[in-house]
Each structure stands twice: as C-alpha cells, then as structure tokens.
Image (cartoon, rainbow, N blue to C red; front, side):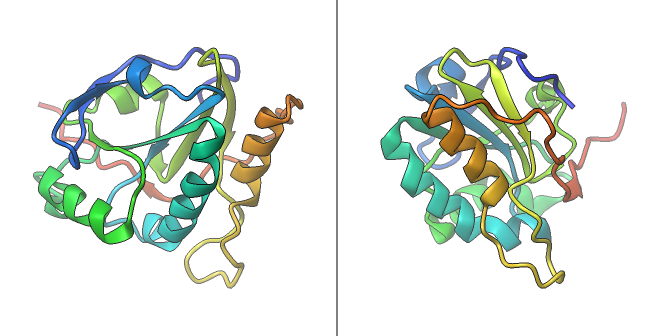
Length: 180
C-alpha cells in the first residue's frame, strides 16, 4: 500500500466523458482530493456505484475533488473501453471525471491493486487515507454505507487526525496488460 504522507503522483489522462485531457493539478480539490481506481465490469464497483455518486454529490461542494480512473486492459476486457466508460459514467450519473489510464502507469504509480481502490489526499496532496469504502461486499448482506471513506473525508474537513489503521480495499484485481 502507498505509505501515508506520500505526495499524490502526478498524471495527465483523457477524460472519457468530456473528451479533454485532465491533470491532477487542474482537478485538485480546495480541501482534499479523492482518487478512485474503478472500472465498469467489476461486481465490487457495481455494488458501490450509487454510494460513490452520493458521496461525490455531498462532498464536492465542500471542497473535496473526486477523480475516477480506469486502468484495466481493454483488449481483454472490452467492457472497460473508453467508449463504454463514457456510457457507464452517464448511466451512473457520475458527477466526477472518469479518466482512462491506457498505459497503466498511473495505477502503478499509486500502487493500485484492485477496483475499487481509494486514495484520499489533503489540500497539499499528501496521502491521508488509502483503504476501503466500508465493510459491504457483493453478497455479504452488509449495507453499503461508505462509513470508512466518509469518516476519513469528514475528519479531513474537520481538521481531525485520521487513524493510520486502515482496512485495504477488496475487489477485482486491476486487469494488467500481458507482459510483452
């Protein structure tokens, strides 16, 4: 896992919704920035999509930027192609950019391992939380509440410390391209 306190790795990626190339500096939030590695086909992401939209709509007006990135190999997982990403973002009502990491270099720089994977940075882009949304998983009967991630966002906004004991995300592995 990326160590707490790590500065957010820079990136410049195409936004599948707007068609514009976006970078971390232009997307950075006034009070914090959440970088999420997600994709279209993963059942773990599908399970939490509604909660991601709720959290974004609640906290973006409070100065927390939300950025979604898909880094999956689209040759072997065509449901995660940029065209399908744009379609899914509209279908889900994503209020945040949905960026495509074709080279997978951004996922590597964040040490992202699965979808969904969450990284919350403070106003200086220093990592304060990297962990799960909550304890809910597809089929485990626990309701999706976003409590772990929302607790970290709330603490950040209130100037409180965020406990360093953070549960890692669980989901589908990022679909890495075969080594050439």
